[in-house]
Length: 264
Image 1 (tube, rainbow, N blue to C red):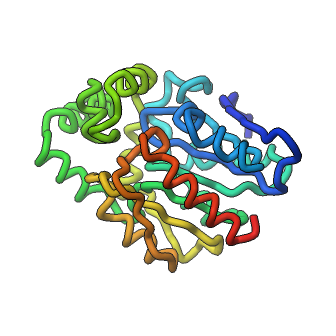
Image 2: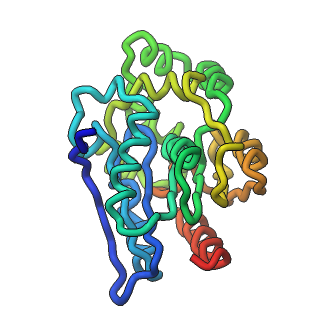
């Protein structure tokens, strides 16, 4: 398999890093940059080598022209590639679609731990799609007919409604939206049912964190946690893209305390 040229953002602690690195996996429409705002510096300051990749076709990684047809399996290969280069098996931390990718990775790989942050559901996204259509039908219908998922977040207002908190300053919404991009329609189909998760195959301890203000994926968080024998923990007053939310530190501190509880 020819390696992909993938963008990697990394923050390292001032002194010696802890033995286990952290690998962060982003969700739809963004790239590794969504972790570099807060999470990578936070975990580096707390002694971890913190690494985030941009999946193929995203941000600074190669393959932008083919992004529409990359599958979840393709993205798992990207995670495999980067994880194999870190010198030690990393903790996998994924948000949204990235949380689903982490689940698929853990089906066939061992890891010290996995963290699912506002993850895409392990069953199907059909109920969420129906709910989205009931709220605002035109963007999703446009995505389906054009095969361009960017239609769902094509304006800052749409992005705020789906991904960000109402109290996120407008200048930050505009900043983040300017870096957003089209994403894979094939991966969207995988999430609808073409390639669902199989929790019984996962032997890695998993932490599942939801977001109180996540109207889209929030209701499925508890079911995802139950499937992994865990209890969902909900970050208060936080939106779907927790890594860019004003309340990001609540989730980051919970991940940190959980890792320490596990001796990682």
